[in-house]
Amino acid sequence: MVQETIQVRKGEELDLNKLEHYLSQHIEGLPEEPLQIRQFQAGRSNLTYSLQKGNWEAVLRRPPLGPVAPKAHDMQREYFILNELYSSYSPAPKPLLFSDETLLGAPFFIMERKKGIVLDQDFPDHVEASEALCTRISDLMAKNLARLHEIPYEETKLPTITKPEGFMERQVHGWIGRYERVKTEEIPEVEALKKWMISSIPKSSAPAIIHYDFKLNNSMFDESFQNLVGVFDWEMTTVGDPLADLGVAMSYWIQEDDSDLLKKGLGDTPITTVKGFYSRDQFIQAYANYSNRDITNFHFYLTFAYFKLAVICQQIFYRWKKGQTEDARFANMNEFVTNLILYASESSAKSLK
Image (cartoon, rainbow, N blue to C red; front, side, top):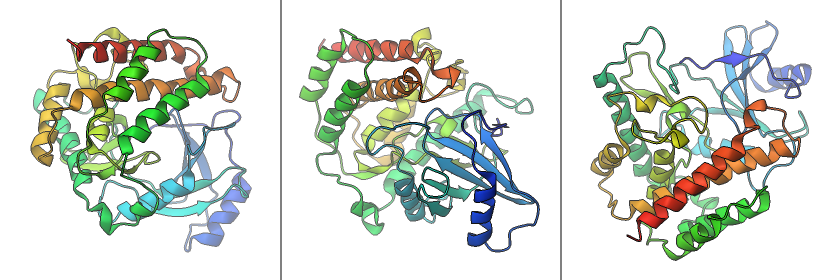
């Protein structure tokens, strides 16, 4: 669908007057019309707003309300990443401005607004969802993930904020620690899963720039679905193991024969269950063909990705339970967390057979 906006949710308003004055000081040639602010409906982490002033449009991103996890929701870092990537990876939006918390009470950045179609649960009414179209979309996703991983990270400034050495060890221990800090109930299967992940870390492949939240509803296509024109939500981007990036992408890629546990965990059944979309195995093979990377140990990366997704959802549920957000979508997210932990646990057990 075309990215939908809503009236700004209660409690998540921006100071319109301060923001309009800030824009007039930092962007030349803005139209005279008053600033209009709306909120993007999608997204469960950072808050994202549509800014419009006459024919000028942009997007503002800021952290969620309330206390946030250490090093999470770093707006200045995401701004820096986009500034390094947009010229060499065209789907990355061009960043325009960054501000610390002094203006709006929280740091934020402003970037260009890209136009196109974002897919999640349904195709737009005017699109005929043929099998060939679904296959083409799948292939574009695999191709563009491989394309991102081909960018020579040494030619950017990203090494100044990243550390590729020991990436997976830090990831496994780091996400286990994040889970322990926000857990709200005991899930018996967690302990065995943690031990398996720690003992099963494979030797990483050559490091690459990784998005680390690469999924269909973070991507935008042109009207003909010939090109992927936008990739969003770069806050987790780093230089690390590209198979970890593929693992995260596949943890979101739901296929037709998946259980309802996965299909409906984050809402309605994702569009990737429609006939013609790649299965996970097909996507993984397409990525391998485009990237020429060895995917022998991919089972570990997918299992870890399910655990990582569970922790992200638990962080969101923790904020809701503590009253740091009133978004009703988060009220039952703990059930999905439990399901993801069970799924990852079952996945790790299969590797022992």
